[in-house]
Image (cartoon, rainbow, N blue to C red; front, side):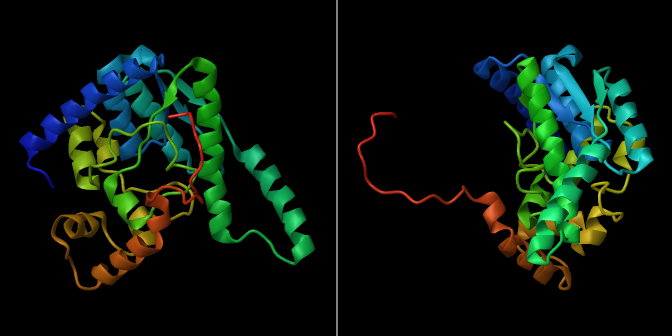
Length: 255
């Protein structure tokens, strides 16, 4: 973890970067998926400091979710005095799941557990982009470095956004920045979870965020955690790399 002085300086630099990025694009503001967790709360705090609360719209999107997460999302919105939209995706998700399963029956297949879980963040990103486009805003990302390095993201779900101010901060660093910017203590101390699978992030991954951070910074950590981190990193490489495309030489006047 970066030393506090350097970390907070980088956080302030990231806040300036948010403002400059928005100005460079001509967007009116940002839309944030407000999960009631540490990452989204910290990004909301950064965006408010960069743009002002009136230019930051937060959206909670419950989908058979834990009710306390919605309460936490409201707390974050109230703390930073930002607009708060609540859009329940349960009905839409249930109908889509049913439609896909009906089609898969013709192949004697059905949606597996992971596919069902990953549908939810993809529904949420559809929702955020629909709101952002309607308002003339951009979607700001809330994924951190630890999650990216082990692929704890959903492709075209929470890993989709227009820009991301915390992509190069580890989980402990995000927590420290959140505390520095006034994120409620309840959110800072909350065990990280995606609200989708009934487990904490660390239970799902089989390693702790502290171990992931240590491995990122030193190339080693707990001997039991190392092979898990390395396996997850290798298998999720496709999530971090540009989308492969077939290319060949041709005349192209568009530069």
